[in-house]
Length: 119
Image 1: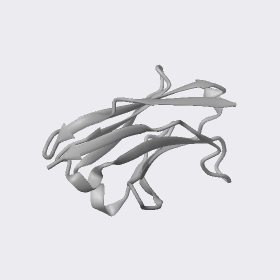
Image 2: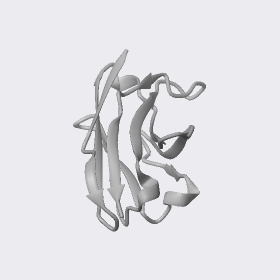
Image 3: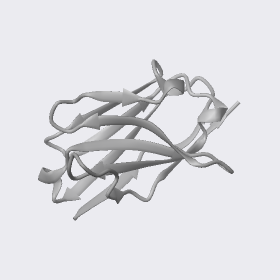
Image 4: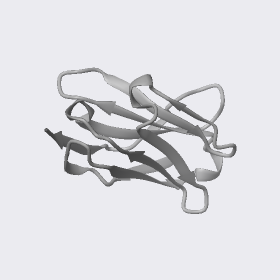
């Protein structure tokens, strides 16, 4: 099992930058990918970004490309989401998720961290 804990959210102004962290513990040696999702008020959860744990290959949802950067620190078992040029529509609870093998997705989730962007 893997336990994920997000941190770094808060209230920011439009145009600000924030870095979210997701620390993993447990069977971290089995992680193959980690992802960030978000759920805005009244909306479905949506994919934000993903990174392969060993190779560092990344994917992004189109609306965050060029503004958000996902990265990981394999020594600290932490994945980051650097968010810049934040807009009110980025307001959401942000969740991280871990994939434990290449044939399945999002077996483990964190509890989420709130990011609120004021205009």
